[in-house]
Structures are given as structure tokens and as C-alpha cells.
Amino acid sequence: MPVDSKKLVKKACQHIKPVEKFECETQRSTTTDGETIKFDYMWATHLSDEDFEWVFSLFKENMYDMYHKSQWGYDENSKRNELRATTSRFIIAKNSKGDKIGYTTYRFVVDHNIPVAYCWELQIVPAYQNKGIGGMMLDTLEKLSSKTNMSKVMATVFLYNGPSLGFFHKHGYNSDVTCPSDDSGLDYAILSKETPST
Ligand SMILES: CC(C)(COP(=O)(O)OP(=O)(O)OC[C@H]1O[C@@H](n2cnc3c(N)ncnc32)[C@H](O)[C@@H]1OP(=O)(O)O)[C@@H](O)C(=O)NCCC(=O)NCCS
Image 1 (cartoon, protein in one colour):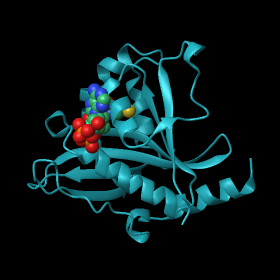
Image 2 (spheres, rainbow, N blue to C red):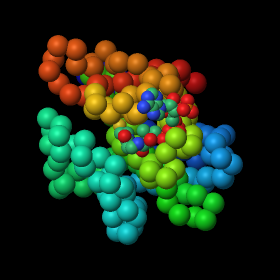
Image 3 (spheres, rainbow, N blue to C red):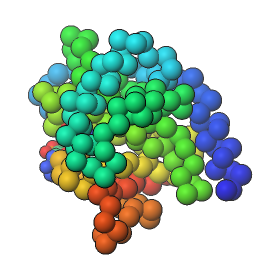
Image 4 (cartoon, rainbow, N blue to C red):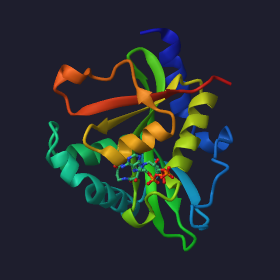
């Protein structure tokens, strides 16, 4: 593994408040129907138990059926550990009343020797989907990827999750070089978008 990739990821992981430090907050804060959204940024290890249970319950509400039928299957303990990993970082969206309405969790990782910002989960509560909030969070992740000298933002999406594939394609994501081929028999795609270094 190139030493630089490892060093860059190690450095990015050490920032306590990377979004604030590098001023990567999205400039968009209004939903398509005019509501102002605010964002909190934190390490997974700094989430309260109550916030973590909300994170997990939204994951389950949105994704249980998809995981249940997937080749990976639904493994609650392993998903809980993933979401709370020390390397996980969170962006939590709140509506104008201060209620939590969505989140993304991302990690800085070396993937196939390349330093990347991996969008590990992106979940919006059903009533707030398709109002631009997921796009705001991707915007922040892409800026953060650039500012921390990661090469791209990556995401893994089930092939039968049409809305999510459509969402990522709309935001300029394409099949990553590491995406399984059409004849692989696997039920997920790996998408990515390169981010310019600044
Ligand atoms: C997928 C998800 C994260 C997107 O976030 P969002 O806030 O709803 O998305 P945005 O409003 O920012 O953008 C929606 C865009 O996605 C695209 N989209 C949505 N559904 C689509 C579909 N079925 N086919 C094609 N494109 C679609 C559209 O282009 C839409 O934009 P437009 O209608 O304004 O042109 C969110 O809907 C969600 O939480 N879904 C359930 C959980 C999930 O699948 N998470 C992703 C796991 S990888």
C-alpha cells in the first residue's frame, strides 16, 4: 500500500471536527418545500445512547427488507458495531423544530490502495425523502473529501435499490473501478465520484 494513502487517511481520521475545520458545510440548507435544515457533526463514539438508538432504528426502518433479501443477509449485531466503529463519523440533519430527520455516516479509509471518504450509510426519514437533504449531505462529503486530499467519495448500493442508484447517479456518481461486473452474480454496486484535491 502506498505510504501516502495510509498517511493521508491517518491524518484525516485524527481531526476531531473535520467538517468545521475545513469549512466544508454545504451552502444549501433549505428543502425543496422551504424548510431550513441544520446539521450536527460528530464522531460515532461521541453519539449518546439515545441518538445511537435513533440512528439504528432509522437504518432498520429504511433498510431491513433490503438487507433481509440480500446476499449479506440482515445481521443486527454486526451492523450496530459498524455504525458505532471508532472510525465512523456522523452528519445528522435536523428540521426546523430540531427533530432528527436523517444522517450519513462516513469513514476515511484506504480502499484498494486509494484514500477515500466512504459514505457508509445515508438514511433520511421517509417523510423527508426527495426534498434535497441527501444531496446536501453528499455536497458536504465531497468538499470534505477534497479538503482532506482523499481521491473520491465512495458508496455501496444494492442493485435493487432503484431510488438510491438514481440519487447517486443524479449527483454524478458512476460505477467505481472496483464495482463487481454485471456477470458477477453479486447484488450490489460500488459507486464513486472523484473529488479534486485543493
Ligand atoms: C436515497 C436517499 C438517501 C436519498 O436522499 P434524499 O434526501 O431523499 O435525496 P434528494 O432529495 O437529495 O435527491 C433525490 C433525487 O434522487 C433521484 N431519485 C430518487 N428516486 C429515484 C428513482 N426511483 N429513480 C431515479 N432517480 C431517483 C432523483 O433525481 C431525485 O431528485 P429530483 O427528483 O429532484 O431530480 C433517501 O431517499 C433515503 O434515505 N432512502 C431510503 C434509504 C436508502 O436507500 N438509503 C441509501 C442506502 S445506499
